[in-house]
Amino acid sequence: MSRGLEVPYFITSNELVTMLSRGRILDIIQQKIDDDGYFIVDVDIKQGGRIVVAIDGDHGVGIDYCVEISRLIEGSLDREEEDFELEVSSPGIGQPFKVHRQYVKNIGRQVEVLTKSGEKYSGELLSVNDGGFVIKEEKIVKPEGKKKKELQIIEHPFNFEELKSVKEILKF
Image 1 (cartoon, rainbow, N blue to C red):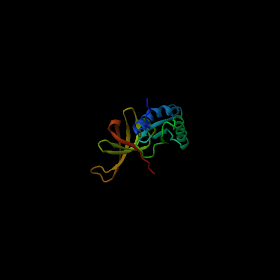
Image 2 (cartoon, helix red, strand yellow; image 1 turned 45 degrees about the vertical axis):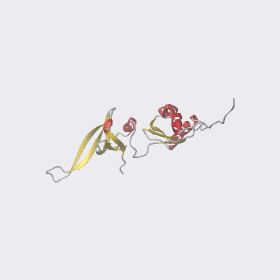
Image 3 (cartoon, rainbow, N blue to C red; image 1 turned 90 degrees about the vertical axis):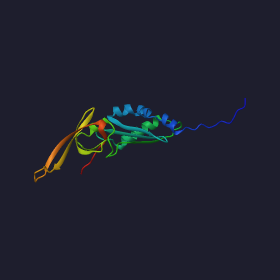
Image 4 (spheres, rainbow, N blue to C red; image 1 turned 180 degrees about the horizontal axis):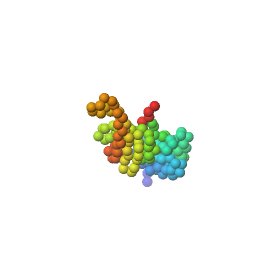
């Protein structure tokens, strides 16, 4: 029996993504994040083994906590078997909400709503339920037949299915 040349086995990006799965990262961090009172906004495995984790909390997330989660993930993965790049952060200001708890966290704050039909609204996030939320929009309008402008307050209910994006807006 002759022994032929051994052909090295190269892992394709699709195989790497399979090994570095979203579910595997969630398994590593979910319990700790829940126990510490934070929540996961997103876990994304990008091409080339780039892992991007976004976490948040009702009172924000500090850099030290992001470092702690990053170390937990790195300590649970073997760099000998999996080459990866890791980024753990909180969602940036002005980034669209991705999970229900972000809506709850932002009750009482100003948000911008963009519907799938292209309509844009902004106002205070009043309430959130499983199906959607309500914002209070304040506009200064000039009613027909009157000389003075008046403050008009309108409550807009939204279903999550009709939305393209919702994000917090900061006013100074």
